[in-house]
Length: 273
Image 1 (cartoon, helix red, strand yellow):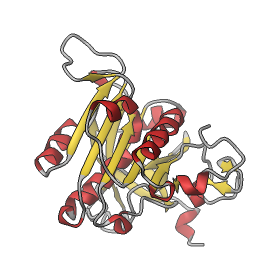
Image 2 (cartoon, helix red, strand yellow):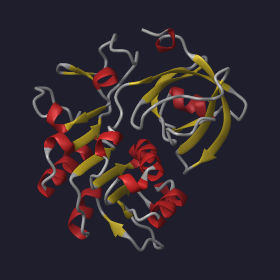
Image 3 (tube, rainbow, N blue to C red):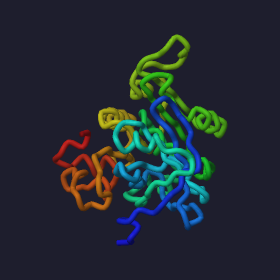
Image 4 (cartoon, rainbow, N blue to C red):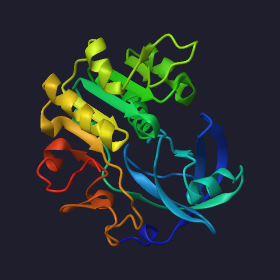
């Protein structure tokens, strides 16, 4: 196995963008490699904050970008809170990329429904940026996005850009404010409120969301082998050695984090966490 799978490479923070009160996007450039990190949408890296530890975080930027890559981070623990205290010009460690991503090349010519919930949106942003670079090679693209409140919604500027490229986008929030005019409720409720069609399902979000999104995909007639889900598990090593992310016979870090439902439905352990 390559040494970079075990030894962090140094990456400089070249930009920080606040998405909402809890989420920031960090733009990174790996030292000595022209800033390039080759990855596929859905893969992740182990990000080290020196003195605090490391955490697995998926890339959210376009895989075709060579000068930098981006990660979107929610401030939820010791490592991420330490990352939030860093500023432009500071350094972090990067191991990876790891795992299997979404098979975007395999989906050419298909009609794709993407469903994102909360911090599950950034990995699907990488998918969307890939699809937009090759828009003419794919069929209908529909994005369903749910957040807790209107203030928690992120990437609004990118979403408007995608709409102009013919993407059908639907928002929903769990709790509306006085200014919100859109849908209210869980993201799966959008399937019944709008004309959602497709023959491939792609989802990323909390485990309970994935459970019900999978049901909605199957009710649409999408085959189990065409449902792609990114699972959350407490990953530590990233290389299948520590066993923390084990689900039955699978390791999320090496066999995933993206699985088809066809792969998951036969596992004896509860895949929804």
